Length: 394
Image (cartoon, rainbow, N blue to C red; front, side):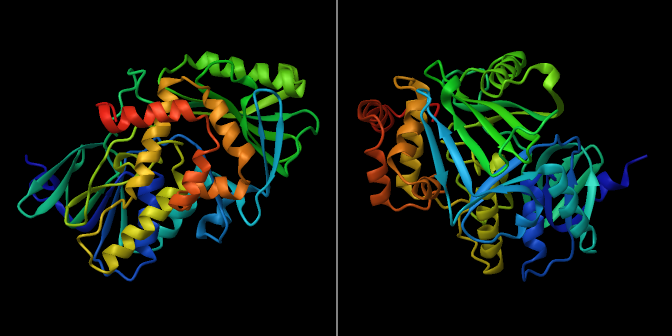
């Protein structure tokens, strides 16, 4: 007997393949838009691990209400144990727990009868005539307008040491006694950076007894999970005097984020649009994705509203792309410590300028001034390598 769903695929206006952060964010902006549509299908493969998303902003955002905690003070600790206390106003740094956010967005969308959720394993994409289709273990689903794909892999070889990754393991702990300052988050602690790879601890205290500690690398080579955990425990003992008996582990997280730059040109004429990590929404040189994804998706929905099919899914200035590629090459070459680069940038520029720079909100003249803060020779070598040799892994 032929499966009816396979023989006669169900039709939707839009299909969002992947119900993670990018897919649900797109669904949210579609639900708030002026677009008219019959139905939108969200195909969710399930088993999404709990994650921490952090971002800074100097203006209100609809997702601010989901923040577990926020900070107006950040700090950066250099390898030489020099502490920088950064007041970031008018910016606010926020932390969102993915499970809380996901549940809230799903509940909002479930109230809209035009959205449908189906849990299915996505097996591929296809075209049937003028319509695009998603192939799943529960049959074929067809989009009369577009499919938004957030599940296809981003081209990054995890085994290639010349392809930069942000890789990390984090522990959320609760101490037996009050210890932390919940008014200040540690963006970078480079006191653990004993190699030329960019290695740091990231600390988000949400109360006097609760904090997230993430051991993070920007490098090409991955570590065994035990190595990250050992470094976190050593850090807790060295800088907070905490032994294993002094705290309880309340949760953990880990991840690998591609930081190599790959051009993924897309315009809205296409029937299948890649979004999220699949579409290159992660900022290549830093691994930041949450706020950038929101900005890009909100613009994308705006272009759909105006029916501007010539619009690009990501519109990036060529100079910003060049800066990203140079920065990545410096981190890959490791001819200067990655920690030194970030230390110099924060030591010689205001916190507000740095946050705007990391958000790609600075102009070309501000970028050039920022580049005078970093060690010149490694960046010049990286520039010539990018411009003249054009390595294939970028």
